[in-house]
Length: 135
Image 1 (cartoon, rainbow, N blue to C red):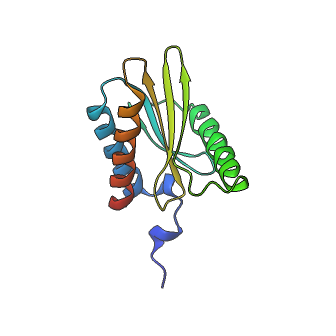
Image 2: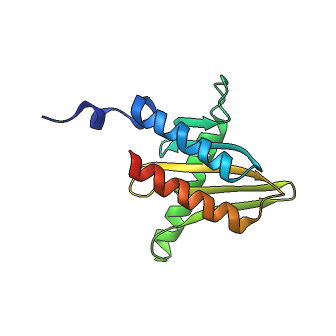
């Protein structure tokens, strides 16, 4: 018999949602310049958000899902191996998208310009790996 948690989408699984919220809180502790972070499913559903809000705004999750899919398609088409992360740099900060290892989920994080890209890459890697191991 199959465990019901395996049949439940990640954004509706209370265990996954709880661990995702904890992972994003850790990301906020490791990087005070974090503006917003979202764990999302490959199909654009928000699993968790930091800071937590009652907002039903799904735009970041849906745009991040599309960008992640596009970046992975480019990597696959060009035969560049396994994709790592996507960075969008802007004058007021940067956005980092990273696949949660072994999962059909993505970590999207928005950092202000006080955060170095290197630190954003390293803390997001740690949080994504720890999150994947915990679920």
